[in-house]
Image 1 (spheres, helix red, strand yellow):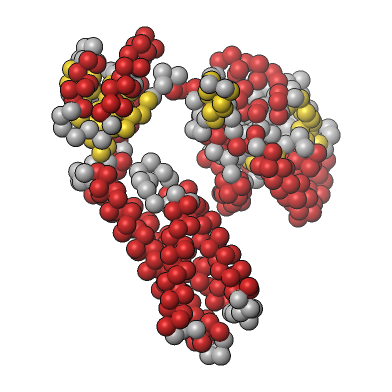
Image 2: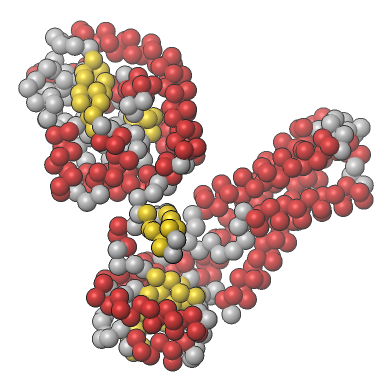
Length: 470
């Protein structure tokens, strides 16, 4: 039943997309040429007869094909709305590009570019709005018990428990746990429907949409038989591997003859194009930011010099890409002390000068790091680098801590814009840093940059107004 519902939903999605694209074109022509420009001689207006309607329908059909190629029709139960919107905009941009090329080769070079731009904006907004509304309606229906997928769990260990807890706390997924199979019953997962040997009987009974295999390491011998039964029953099978906690969000599978290698630390920035793109943006961005902030840096340098004896710039060894050491620059915000290479900065730190406390509060002390970015030691966006003294400690006590060194450290990052900076939990920082590394994209960097500008520059660090700080 769920498959029939999904097929019907896909058809409705296609039909609505075609209608919205068609309406968007007519609206764009009317608004731009009829209302704004009052240019009724433009080819876009003159083609508003039957030929234009047929052309618009044809373009809508082409766009649906493009959307299908971009996998925009299917189940999006577990996909973030932002990811779906980004894919839709990419597909729509490709459609506009093809339309522009078609107009050029048809010698309609005086076709209104304003109409095309407005058409792209209008169609994108309408298509996004439709998907947001449709997703919201489906989530509400699933939470009410409709449009459910019936899931059978094989196993009753910690992985099965974690999976069941996830579904219960995310009812909008629309996944209903029928029960579980295991050698013995266990509370908290659901109804115990029998042992593993009972799986063929259950697959021949009530409708099972999916079997989720969550076997523990000592039960791995059952895996081959369980998969065989599921394939014989024609039921979709998903596996939660017992090494689940070590797998990134997007693992890479490499084929070597008949051997499949699961690369658990393959990241988007391993791709040469992505790495070159990020580095190019860092170079351009750091140059622009150095020029824009040079007056502020000049004032900060004078303020540091007047705040007390010592150098204007604070230089400190940090651990960067591939665990290589580099010298990171900051405006000095503390008095010269014996613990500056190993000491941990806290919220109330008597080593800070009054002026240093101010520039730390507003993140002005970080501005010299733009030169680190330009040199290639750092990136504008990435995990914050740490001093070697603490890296040696954290790598022994915090799981996956050293993974952050697969990318260049950054001036700001996903953890920092979520308030994890200064004297905060290292475990939480690493969790956010790993998510950023595994899900990197140019648009994520842009998002972090805007979040930093509109909320991440002023931190929660308190100003040190004590006499000792002056």
